[in-house]
Amino acid sequence: MDLTVIALAGLVAIAASGLAYAFLFSRIEVEKKTTTRVHKVAAGEGDRAQVKAAKDRVQELSKRRKSMQESLKDLEKKQKEKDKKFGDQSMKAKLPRSGLPLTLGRFYTFSALFGGLVALICLMAGMPLVAILGLGFVAAVGLPRWVIGFLIKRRQDKFLEELPNALEVMVRSIRSGLPLNDAIRLIATDGQEPVKSEFRRVIEAQQVGLSVPEACARMLLTMPLSEVNFFSIVITIQSQAGGNLSEALQNLAKVLRERRKMKAKVKALSMEAKASAVIIGALPFIVATLVYLTSPHYISILFTDARGHIILLFSGFWMAVGIFIMRNMINFDI
Image (tube, rainbow, N blue to C red; front, side, top):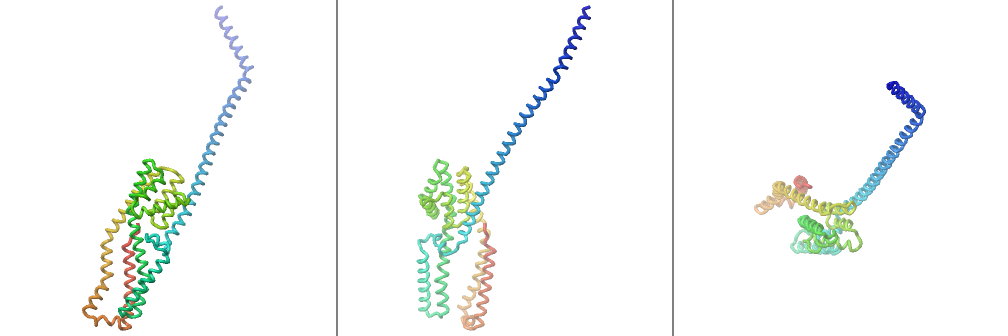
């Protein structure tokens, strides 16, 4: 009896559950679909947010890329202008590089006076007219330009020797808290020549309204060196993109020192070839001088006969060709 009641109660419960499920099935399905749709909509909104964030990142990268391209174009344009300044070999551009307080007019005046003085001395010595004109031309045109070139080379060598020390002083100044302008002014005040005068020009350019990168780039006008170009590029990039300036200048000073060591090593390795070239180039003149001192009548035919003049002309031409070839063989660009 008890089991029958329990079984009937169970059957009634199952039947009631079945009826409830049958009546509530559609509603349960609707709620399930609604929940699924809500989840999909929420996921879609999340995907849209991710897509929007990705688009924003792409747009930001595109803007940065465009800005970088414009900066590179500006740097390329400035670099072309610098290359033009590098290639300026006129006397007007060379005089400031030599460190001499000379204007172009004074240089030409001194050259003409020196050429006239040499020609007058040759005339008083009784030399032929052709020799007087040749020596006067060399003294007026060739020798002053050679002196200017020699002074420029010597000044550039001193600048390259002192520039790494100046950069290290700037690094210590910046790390101690000084701004870049004060670090440059410190070199312009307490540095060694010719670095001192070049950095003083940078300060003067800033005083007339130029920015620090533009003032540093103008240094190429009076010191057209690759090392100065490196320095101006470092200052320009730091001013545009930021970064650790002291570390960049320290690395630049290290690179310049290693570059100078490499130049010294190449010079030492090529010194034997240079000595051989000097000996070979001077040997014909030494032999001709010794023959003239011992047997002047034997060699004087070269200067008195027309055929001797032709021989001297061809000899000088081939000597110049040989010297040019040897010079290119023993000179190395670093």
